[in-house]
Length: 421
Ligand code: AMP
Ligand code: ZN
Ligand code: ZN
Image (cartoon, rainbow, N blue to C red; front, top):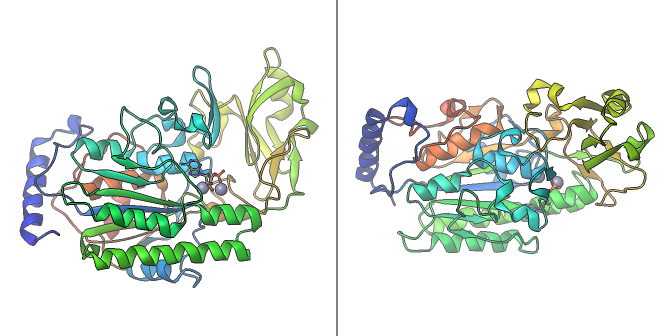
């Protein structure tokens, strides 16, 4: 619990820090172990929950947070609108092009293949940048992840103090129980930064559609777990001293399996290698075939378009990373790109993401409440790279260089003496 006097001490320390630090030191870690701890920060992700779902009566707990908390019109996901690139952007503030998780599955010329949901996904060498828990630990704060893409890998030589290998069988309620158990640790061991990740909506929407009975049931299950989380905070008297952010990584659109475009109808598969298919395809022409593959592929096709990696739409901030293949193809919403001899997994597929980030259906949501937020305040839409500087601000630690800006949140943050970065 934070008494006013403790907050006053924080204020004084921040003022002192602001006075001492020069712009060149902005990326430096915060001094270790402040005498007072920041409010606990809970970051909750509901994978794939579209921006237009909260507030529609399907998730009463989330709806109440929307009504009472600080909320954004929506969040623009980073390109590509897939789970691993975006979750890692949320905790690093870097575009996928910069943090290197440029797709759920990718190829690195030195390290080989990365598949996010397999063992290679836990290999820290693939994960660039620095997730927020690294700086938090450096500042002497305990951290815990109840799942988060990247949390199982040793990145920058470290992992969260508490982390779990991903296990989709663990129910939302069980995950919440684990989070609450962490909050029951003695004050000097209690994590000040905790993530909670829930994929049940994403899984159900892929299998059965965005508003299918299965997807609605997943919304209800997740919402009931959120209610338990809030009740657990209340029961421990922690609500007033906890900043809670609930958000998603991207949205979801209904698709029909029959709406498939075949890449090998345009260029024979013998001329190139591919590292991914589906909504976003990475194509590498075989030696000597670059001109021919480009001639046939680059440009607009029925239901998809392909670009040289250097000429992708600037708004996507994508194409400089060596892991991005020389040709990138993006399907239109609702479609998918496939090769005739390589059927995609996830059959049947009724819901999908990975479509262009400008599509309103790909928009993510954001709501926050707690001591640092102005209740009921609203934000226009923002890019999800901005979440990381917000996390650093809420933890009172220095953000390392990133692609986002804290200014986005000025309308919803209670004024403080000086931001910590
Ligand atoms: P996708 O829909 O292909 O972008 O990936 C999302 C799916 O990845 C989720 O529905 C989970 O089943 C799975 N997933 C999420 N986090 C992890 C993780 N840390 N490790 C392995 N698989 C995960
Ligand atoms: Zn996702
Ligand atoms: Zn998904």
